[in-house]
Image (cartoon, rainbow, N blue to C red; front, side, top):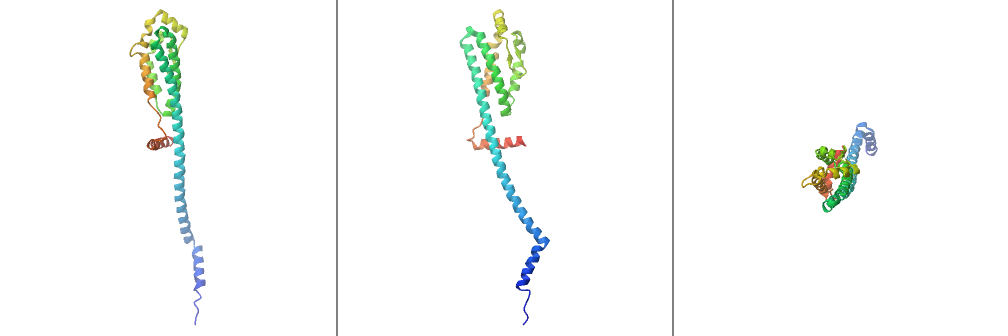
Length: 212
């Protein structure tokens, strides 16, 4: 009776040959690489999502801080504006306070625009330019950022000599009223909260597009 020598030993040898076969090994490696690349993409997506969420939260936090800064300065402007209306006998003193408050608002608005990706300061600059000749009469210089350079003693002299030259500031619908309205509208632009998932998702996409 002849024994089939290729039974167990032959199968082992064939398996070993298949393992050593470059084509077999290549197919095995390709399967592993495919699995690994799929897992890596999933890990990358999860990692990117976590990073992007962190970016959104940081951005929103900065927006809230700048909004608070602007809000505070705008409130000071409103208070100075109210004092001028309530106490016209000290018109010049309150007017100087208004101009100082305006300059602080301009600084805050500049930072506000940067973090909110807006251009409100440009609109303010264009608005104030329309009054350049009126301010010139009062020896007030409009700076490039729309802040006002005021010489207090000179301003008081102008008021004593020509109080009518100040009419454009305080008349109904005049410069100060329009400036008040401009700032008051901006105060209504509030940053989104982190509680609203739809807003977070929208800002996440926006910030990622900007970063790209």
